Image (cartoon, rainbow, N blue to C red):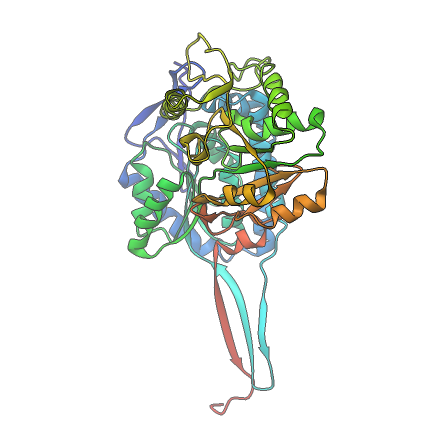
Length: 475
């Protein structure tokens, strides 16, 4: 086991805590490091330090907060070559993707720092001036998943701190290490208590959502867990932002160039081994091009190399954890038991670790599990449709509404289809592009609230309206 020193960061200090737990490398299935296991007393200490720091941080001028966030981004970027191999070891993604995850977080910090909070003048009359400002919520608990540990953390950290809040950041139990190191970097930039980082097992998340010291919960994860977070936060009426699961559909119309389209469709579905909330998880293909596209898609899939993320030849890494691997295996077994046709089923990798081959299912029934559930892994159903009305109805008949994409040589037609889809984000002739300057959030059971842009920034504030009488009879 690699005995690195990993510490939580609380009130500017390195804190080991009372215990530790093992962190596994998904490419081997074996533990390679230990992380601090935060107990309730230590969590309370972190929240209290954030609460005390809030009284000072909220008074720091907005431009100064912007500058410190940019300095934080620069400090992380300077360490990317050190942090990326660590991220690959704990998460499993290939090294280039680990660097992208970290640098995406850097980009999110830098670009979010450019945003400005709006001020609304509601009335400016002879009698009074009525102005609405947006003030910070207070102490934020940020709970981050294991698929993009750094980018998704900075999506929360950047607007929370910019708005004047303080933060306790919790990475997923299986991917805490890189975030803990970034917590150490933060202490060189921010005053003590402004950004605290804790790590722990599955008990830590519920402790955070229940703790009265937190004023807001920002959570990214599954819809099932999101419902539990909302229920837990209700006890003290905490504000919540929930970025939850998706079963994103991809609609492919005739008139597309298959040579250029197939790689885009493949990586839109299988980037990060399919472990992406906005990955294409249902591929609806017009019947006129279905067979041709299916064949081209399988041909491309056969060229992909799966292996240890530290191996330069690897294009995809393992599944991040054993629980998710078993869930994917269960979905594959269900397809086999139902007699569905596999257009492609890659060979099992005879090696240690949580690896799973690519699987492509040929036109399974609409109400099968593989179509209706979010697989979050390297198994994808390709589905045939005949009319626009039909495919729109099938896509919208889902409890999820996170994202979707439409691909067509006729952009006007594609936008018309996109306008009919019940999702928070829809891409035309691309997929998975996000921006700190655009809002992102889900419809239906895919989430509550927004991330990105001024809309996401406002999620970390509450409106405060001041009424000033110009002509007062009491004076």
